[in-house]
Amino acid sequence: MNSIKRLKSTFAELPGNTRGIFWMLFAAVFYAATYATVRYLSKEGFETFQIVFFRSFLGIIFLLPWLFKSGLHVMQTKKVGTYSIRTGLNFGGMVLLMWALGNLELQTVTGLMFTTPLFTVLFVATILGEHVGLRRGAALVIGFVGAMVIIRPGFVELSWPMIGVLLTSAAYALVNVTTKTLSVTDSSSKIVLYVFLGMTVLSVGPAIYTWNPIGVAHVPWILGLGLLSLLAVQGVTRALAAGEAAVVMPFNFMKLPFAAVLGVLLFAELPDLMTGLGALIIFSSTYYIGRREAYLRAQKNVK
Image (cartoon, rainbow, N blue to C red; front, side):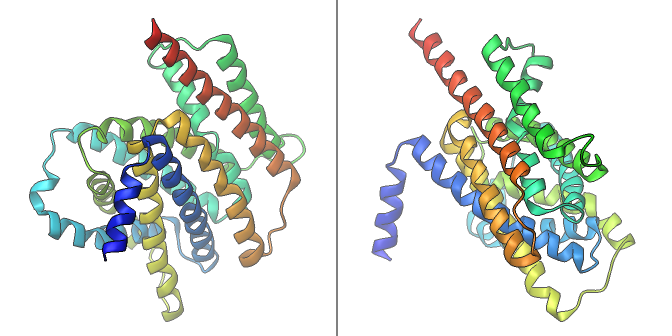
């Protein structure tokens, strides 16, 4: 017990960005495992809304010990509007993502999801009116070229699941903005619990309507989905709370090799060179944008 306390103390003393990088790597492992679990359940005949309900409801169950320990008063908030927007975006994005995972290879979904930081920059420029210079603009264009390398329009048929992944990525870009805002005053467990509560309410009706029977062999996978996804979401939330998004988000790229390995082992999905190349282009562009933003902030602070 003392060794665990010392480990926690040592970790807490690390710089914020270092802790953020650790949490993002932690999240990447469990997101890849979550994607693989969703793909398995989809292949077993479970419908999209049913899987979303499993994930959300079990997330609540796994967080109940924290809630009982902390007390119901920790759920008090004055940010109902922000939570509502975040829940709606999460729900829409998750429905599309779960559907895509049932219809595309793990590596393809994972590679396209790396466009989230690109959409973040795009939204900041178009919605908030923030100036995006020539360098960041060029990196943004290159990043979306990387997405086209994965999609290969004209060579591979552009499918609705691919479009669904891009829409999910766009929704999650907005989710990341709200996460950073909420994490200033609220704990990661509170943020995650509120989202799971909202998504459970939104998914229960469609899940019942499309319900498929659960076999004994499915139970470990369903429980695993809840636990793995909870750990993944906690990892991202803690990463964004501990470090700068521009520094920690590029480490989300590690989802791709983890997902590729699971695709080979569980579904015999051979690694695709073009998907890897496209993902690398996207990662390089998002990494440059992140470093450029950090540099510009430092220059501004100096002045």
